[in-house]
Image (cartoon, rainbow over all chains, first blue to last red; front, side, top):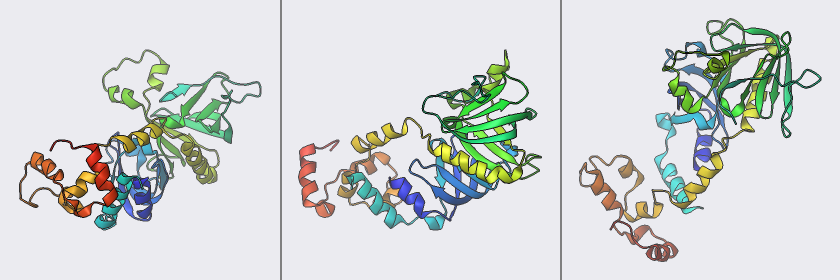
Amino acid sequence: MLFFSYFKELVGKEVTVELKNDLAIRGTLLSVDQYLNIKLENTRVVDQDKYPHMLSVRNCFIRGSVVRYVLLPPDGVDIDILHDATRREARGN
Amino acid sequence: MVLGIQPFSDRSADGGPRLDAEEEVMRVERGAAVALGRRAPESPGTLYVTTRRVIWLSDTEAGKGYSVDFVSISLHAVSRDPEAYPQPCIYAQIDLGEEGDETDDSESESGEDEELSKITEMRFVPSDPSQLDSLFAVFCQCAELNPDPNTEIEEEEEEENSWVYSDELMEGGMDWQTLANPIGHSNGDHDLARNVLELHINDERFEDAEELEEHRNCGSNGH
């Protein structure tokens, strides 16, 4: 549940989601669920060459299982909180 | 569960799709067109969004239809940009899994079915664009009902033998930032092996009393 809790903290922030098919989509994180399905708004494709037909869709829903990376905003990473959370998660608390 | 777009022709007496036992229709959109990949849109037809998949049935050709399982839909979105596509529609990307990597290899398209299974994009065009947002919402709801079958198994494994033990992290007395940037920190050594060895240094400062006992019982690895 660690990533679910962590991503909930990022709601409202700009993230870039990179899919396993190499497509990268930038947008504002609208919501996330326990399967790490991601909803983004104000999205734009980072590299438009592969999927030119996907230009600036407004809202999108990304299936959690196809996400490779979620690129975080620099001010969205609180290292201390993340450290505590990972420790607790590994202990099984 | 099959990945990719499938031809669908199994209709019930009322003209709608014949569904599986547990499957329910969440939304019916009449007068909807479907565009597969770069093909021209096909219409008129009826879109059925069920708890398991999206089915489009042609209104004019009795045997013609397509279905795609939600587990195969990597993403879906509302597309209103006329530069992307002339009509406002729901845009969906289809996950082909391992097969997707082979699209460049075989140029042979021996039948329409084979071509169908390689399509990675599709669009659903309602006759009424004002329905797009609610249609998008239904897609979201149904996608959430179809998590990966592998998801639960992964969660179990993480609790058992994950290769990173938090106890070892604490023993090394290394804080998160040191781990994230091993180069240039502590002894300035770039040697990864040495960093790993350092993790096993016993440092009881961060241990709770209970966990100390547990850890001694578990034995040591790689000391």
